[in-house]
Amino acid sequence: MLPAHVESALVEITALLDAADVAYNVGGSALLAIEGFDVPVGDIDFVVDPAGRSVIELIFPDHEVRQSTPPWESAWLLGARWGGGDDAVSIDIIGGLALEIDGAVARFPISGAETTDIGDAEIKLGPLRHWYHLYRVHTPAKAEMIAGWLTDDEIMAGAAELGISEVFSPTLIVRIGNDLPSPAIEVDMSTEQQSSIIEVASPTDVQFDEPGTETIDLDLLNETLEYIRPALQADGGDLILLGTEGGKVTLQMVGACGGCPLSTMTLTAGIERILQDRVPGVTEVVSV
Image (cartoon, rainbow, N blue to C red; front, top):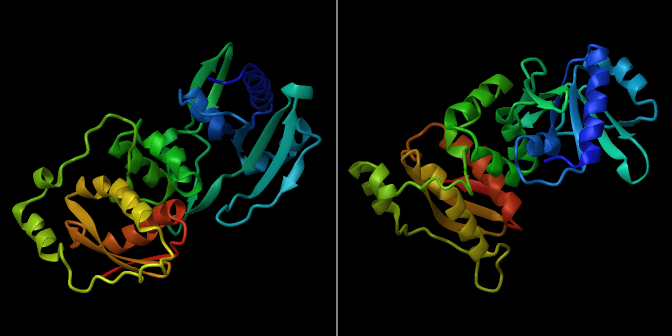
């Protein structure tokens, strides 16, 4: 639910955008709050048609120009304030939302936005299936929240609409807090796949840093791998921690993931990012 002053600003600004015929949709924390997520709303993110910049500058005469730095690939970014005093709301206006996701540039469509009614106003919203992918890069905890509300097909449709379907693997979909049972590997995997895990369950080449010299907290690393594992098991695979060396983590993908041509991409694009985000000291993830 939006705070009253944020809702008021949203209604006033969208009325001006509609009157000026500027294509837009709302994203960020305001989108999540409107969709029912319990998140704080500190500002409003508007994604607009880059061609509407001159109109935007008239609507927000006291704007500031912000730099679009990697991984962001937007045409332009403006920041502004709406209202005054304690009720002033920070506004971010993004001219053509685009950023690098999984090694490819994802460009967020402005047309085809979903709508919701707030008071007498019809507000255009960016689809959650798109913002899920943005948050995988920007704020993984929010991506996990959104994933609990979406089906796998919706998430994959979002990847296709953003132009990243060829680099996004379904094994990167991780859900928390949604009452869905974690699939049991003994049930979901064939006997042959289970055997492949048994054969490597006690690898002879396991190598960890010497005690007292560890760069990585092994307990936290194992906890995070357990968090990732259900997503792999859902596709009939799993992973095994083979060792650490400084900031490098060595894993083995097994089961269906071991024979999947996307397994290396999954590691570099997904598991590495999650580990780097959650486990201090992780600099690289490799598979053998």
